[in-house]
Image (tube, rainbow, N blue to C red; front, side, top):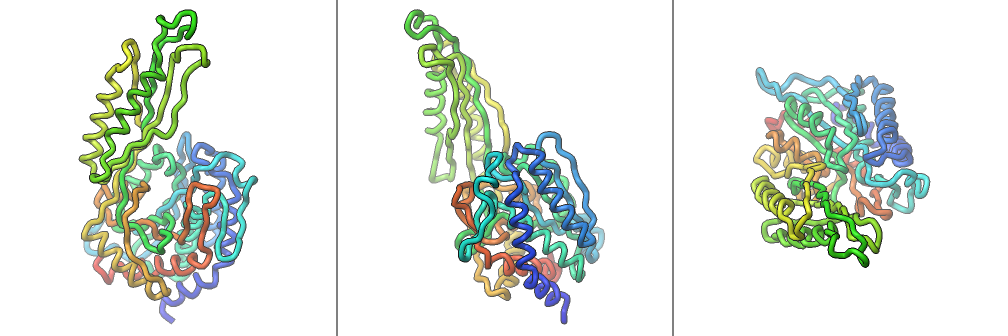
Length: 392
């Protein structure tokens, strides 16, 4: 039996074990701002990897979940003096859900689908990576060192995870990001970049009936700015802007002394990002309502993931590997952002959306296609083994 066959056969035997790990992780709180909860999912990763003889390392983070690295030694790097030798399996443990969500709707399986907070985005992908690492630790066969990187703040733009990801990318030759496979069964070769920012507006409080003229409305100013910001959307260029959160004011009978709103900007090209951010800064600096002041703070940012000739070669390897598990896979574009943009921006061939298939992420209806877990794990394992044959 070849090493590849041994690995894929072992993965096929681990379906129930994978589901058990997914259930435990889904049933653990892990919102991005819940550091203790995200760190508990990290402890689960560490326990599993170390039980399979895989060395782990924690990279402490101050506000969000610590980053976990699992290292499986593999064959020599491709070529003489190649420093970009690691094959990186990446994923994030945090979710978008509030504390207590797993208690309200814990992991469950109904028919062919599993449900629960973060089940597809992306706790199933985390578990898949864990088992792929375990398979190579058990049977060998990797053409280079494998690094599993498990981060804890992707859903808010990876403010603390990004430097760890970029440091990992500096020594990587290929990155597989196990975000959920698309509902179509496809993987992701291109994503938009995004900037998440906050605008704070200052006005002046006054009684809205007895002293109206003395007031300066921060909410009125925010309304002008929001209209101007939304007008920057250019669908033909793939540029979208959305003010998705707003809060402000003191009482209904007080001119609002403050207002805060948050902006989601998405672009395909970095040049568009810079152009639009310049226009946003101009809008924030302008006082539509005399006497108001405003500041803009960038809270998180993703780089776009755009295909390169090298990433297309990675996809070709993956596509052929997936076909042997009965999967017909194409590569597609999505407007969502992910950590894969950081590695791609540094020139590392990156393929995203290689995790198990799921849909309706970030909603109570989020689901995972249970029967996709094993073949997607097998596809990744086969692709890893064949990277060197493809000159990657």
